[in-house]
Image 1 (tube, rainbow, N blue to C red):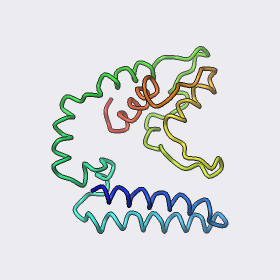
Image 2: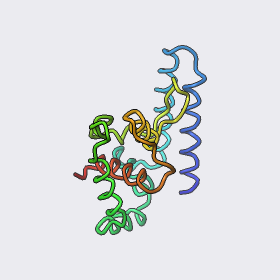
Image 3: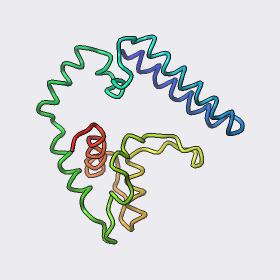
Length: 163
């Protein structure tokens, strides 16, 4: 399993690098399309019984015992308090009267992370949250724990179909 995750990381990095180092836009798109087909083909071949949509569940789509444990944990999820806190923070308006919903669509979290070719960097949901805050006159939140983790967890939880 660990080897599969390492291979996934390597393929993702190589795919991202190919976008940066490819030539014109047409060849970039062709290369990206080919990389996606190669990437998906590897996992379809390696795990033929896994439905495509289930890959969003990560390791839980690939390993039955891990999935069983995950389903049991989900009954009384230990992160629910963080989700509740994130919901409260997300709903709070900034000093200028705007809020996170002015920066993000309802299902925005599913777009992250992604590689921004123009900026030449990976854009994470936490980076986007802080950019939303600073563009609205608020201070950026630090690190990957505390309030920023709660807001990003809440946003990710919404993408999973929870309201």
